[in-house]
Image 1 (cartoon, rainbow, N blue to C red):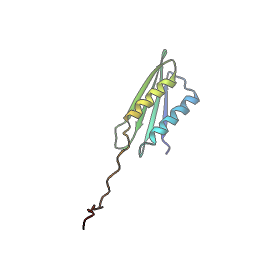
Image 2 (tube, rainbow, N blue to C red; image 1 turned 90 degrees about the vertical axis):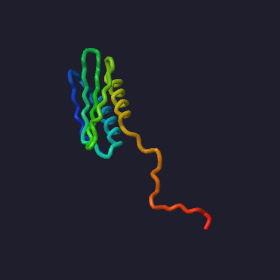
Image 3 (tube, rainbow, N blue to C red; image 1 turned 30 degrees about the horizontal axis):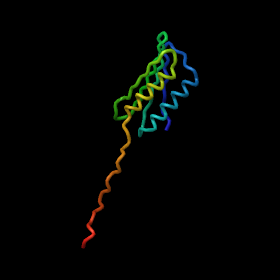
Image 4 (tube, rainbow, N blue to C red; image 1 turned 120 degrees about the horizontal axis):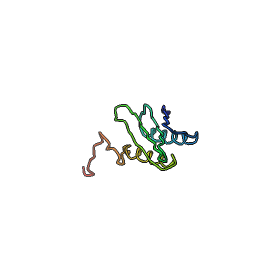
Length: 109
């Protein structure tokens, strides 16, 4: 499933490798949803501080927003934002759903 990803850079220069890394992370996170409308990845630079914000928009749900901060490099900030976004995604059910319509009978007739 391909997701429309919008990259925004505020006072920042982003390498193609960092864009590809962010795109892979968003695609991986989006695969856990039935449908994702789009994603916005923002890179900001303010002096030595680097900030990455990821916004996932899905229908019938609130937007999932996570951000990460780092000093000097975008890699750790992106990893932190992805980790925070993963924490917001609901886990799959671990228990098996019960079978319906199956009557259990005792062995004695």
